[in-house]
Amino acid sequence: MVLGVIDGSASKLAIFVIITLLEALCLISYYLVVAVGPGSPTEFSELCCLQPDPAVRLEPPEFLKSNTVMVKRDGGYRFCNKCKVWKPDRCHHCSSCEQCVLRMDHHCPWFADCIGFKNHKFFVQFLIYTSFYTGLATFISGYCLYKIYYLQSVSLDKFSLHTMFVFVLGAVMWLCVSVFTLFTIYQLLVNRTTLESYESHGYRSSGNSHEIGNIFDLGYKQNWCSIMGTTWMEWLLPIRTSSEYGSGLTFQVNDLVYRKLQQEVQLQERLSQEITNYRSLQKQINKSALPPA
Image (tube, rainbow, N blue to C red; front, side, top):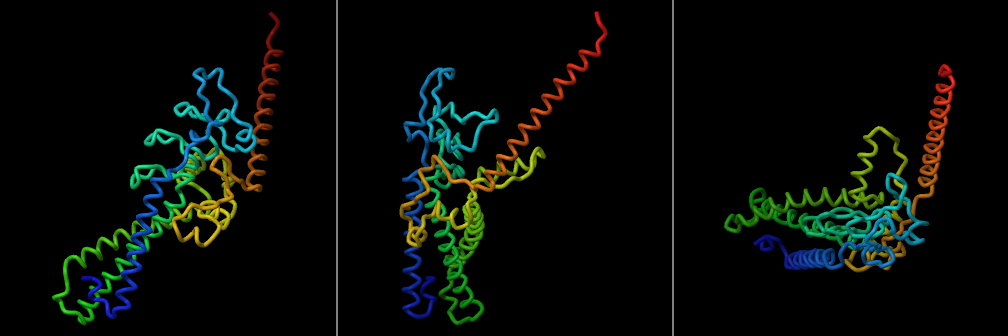
């Protein structure tokens, strides 16, 4: 019905091919998000630590020691007691999937799976394909309604509730998906996951420190290539990338932010030491001020 209102057989064929192609890309990228999975540290034997007694827990591997910037509150290396694995930077445990996820972005109910290091690219592509698909459906159905009601160049006999339904549903879906797609692309360009955006917001609002910067932000281009690949073919099609950005266990860091973070840590350590010395001096003064027994 919708294509029947379009003028010209060439236009109809072009629209049909584009819609079919977008449908195929949506289905393929959806499948790859689920089939590839987010990636987990449990897939790497060197990160597993199955010692039953925490007191005799093995040390983390050397590559993790030398390349880790995220630590626990006490300064120790992060460890998951549920999965029994050492947690690399940006790795989090998902209570829904019941496993740790490499570079976890979020748990997505659309896929009943997590979005992480391995399937993030396909997730972004799925959103982009879906945005174009719903946008095209909205435009075509809206054009049909425009010809029927405004131009009146098409007989009302060709009108059906199907066209109106496609327009309304397409417009709502296009608006919702497009907003989420733009947000996801922005997060990708600044190299920040959804979880990290929540964490950084809570950190800043606590009032205990100022914003230092995102240590994983390497610039828009490098951030994009680290997830989407380095070629146009990898950007446009749902294919695996020949990425040079590792396996999700370690990540490049912004040297400037890293130096700022080091200076911040050194300042906090110096301040803590000065407070300790001051308290010790106060105890000595108070003790010497006591009258002799």
